[in-house]
Length: 284
Image (cartoon, rainbow, N blue to C red; front, side, top):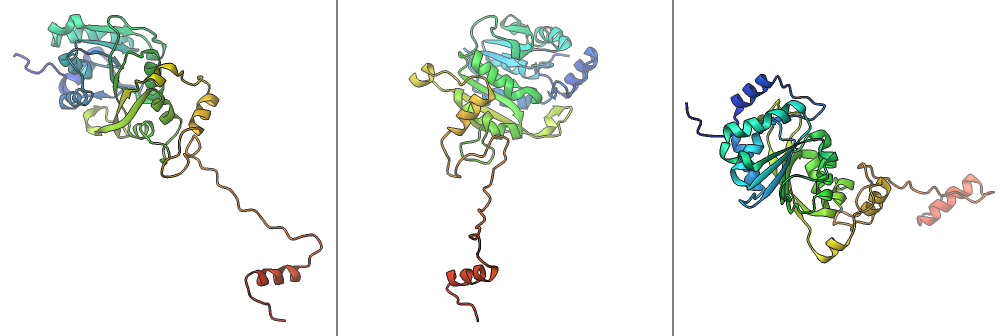
């Protein structure tokens, strides 16, 4: 039987996982996309072009990888899992043999990657492991300035925080860090049913377009210490909702000052003075 669609469907994902004896683990935030329409939608939303060199983090069994290879000039995937990293090149060769020469695999922890083989990446498109999504995203933006456009799928709550404007209730340090490198916006939502196994949380797409200007090239990001980023967070402009909340989402409220009566004033005298201030004279 001739295969008409090179992308992976639900049956393909489960068959491949069974052959590799792969069981998705929460420790690595593994939830595989099993819907071909969803990965094609991600590629369209990312505006991947025929001239792009795309870097993907956490390709898993290759659902999004194959969709990227259909459009992009080259794709480099960074995978930490030994079994998945060993199997992915064979999956690409079997389902998109004409694009096998344009695929590169880096078997490593994405947080340790400082350089990539082949042409410099121009786009980052990934279904990021939810447990390390923000650190991985910021690491890639910092170390690969050639990346002009980014589209990542993350937990919906994380997506809201990354794209939050100053003054919103969910604005925080991740918002400041992402905005330091790029113009950030929410780019859509993804339902739970397109994953295997289905996650317990909703997912969202976040689009980031690299900020390019004289000031952006000259400035350096704050030091990596949390104190430096907190200073940048507090220096961010206030939005229409007022100043941003403190990192962590907690707002410190001021307690009303207690008015203390001068020493030596009797309780009756204090009560009389309160009535007098209100314009009411006490009964004698």
